[in-house]
Length: 277
Image 1 (cartoon, rainbow, N blue to C red):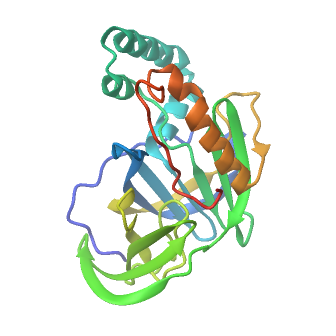
Image 2 (image 1 turned 30 degrees about the vertical axis):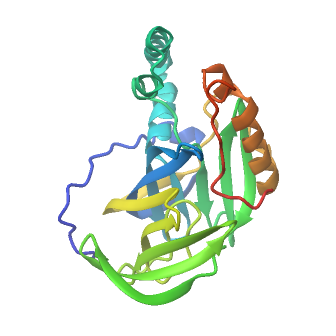
């Protein structure tokens, strides 16, 4: 049994509606929450935040954004009209005040759109994402990091953790894992250590994943999340081509239409994976 964590675990109600239309891959016995802080502008060093959910099952794990999943669940449960009304009101406020921060926080919205499914198919990782109006899917390596475990230790959520380091796709990372939680899992694409990854960040702190809580669950379905739109389908691609598409979109897509990324208000982007260059 896992020791009780003496922190307030955020009460989250993750919608698993429409299961008849979504494939159940496994059942989770452990659910982990991570605060994800990531770089938005490499010049101004502005950051954004997300809350990631990691479901761990006997054979398969799934990691995704709570907020993106929440937004999609509202649509799927017939709340599209209400969501659209909130969005329209937020756009009115933005056009009136040109305050992007208010706009971004005034309605349920998608944030990180990456869904990772570890050991699906067996021995591989499936990644789905969304760029512009396209849903994309590609296969990736599982346990792709080559970790070096060091001697440093510290305590996170009352667990003794060890430090590990790696170089992964253009960035150097430091991670802290808990040997007393014997699962080789972590947020996003990180895994492969002899214990749950509690914290991981690149050495410049541009991308930071920090555990906020974990809880045991019983037979919580791990589903393969289908595209939001009923007629939409995933388009197969490769990881490198996906990253290149993503960078093109950041530079020349909808970002510029909202008043940033222009010559008057430039934004300089980078991606967490840098080996596409």
